[in-house]
Length: 140
Image 1 (cartoon, rainbow, N blue to C red):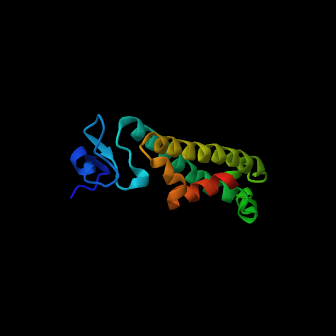
Image 2 (image 1 turned 135 degrees about the vertical axis):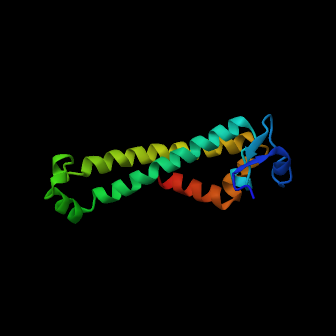
Image 3 (image 1 turned 60 degrees about the horizontal axis):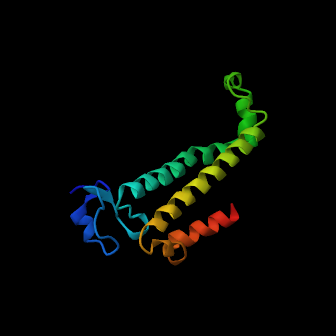
């Protein structure tokens, strides 16, 4: 069995939310909220996913930057030659700004992709994915 997310146009056309790949032989369309059945939508999906994956290490570093006991302990090791563990507030602030930009980019490219496909913009308020994304952007 092929576990690749790329499916041939005929396979995608069997899905209730797509008529098959548009202008390309294979596309990504495992479910309605992640259906990218043309080249531009696949590019937007790639950008949206990469912006989310880029943030994961930053989430850890933001958390660790405020772990004061750990930072204090690391400041007493040889690692202090390479990293100043005594003041991590600048790192925390910088990564917070980067995460905000990346999160906004992530939401923007998903929304742009949905706006291009038929009535998919309705997914913004009619799917759990869209609703939770909107709530996250409101509180960002």
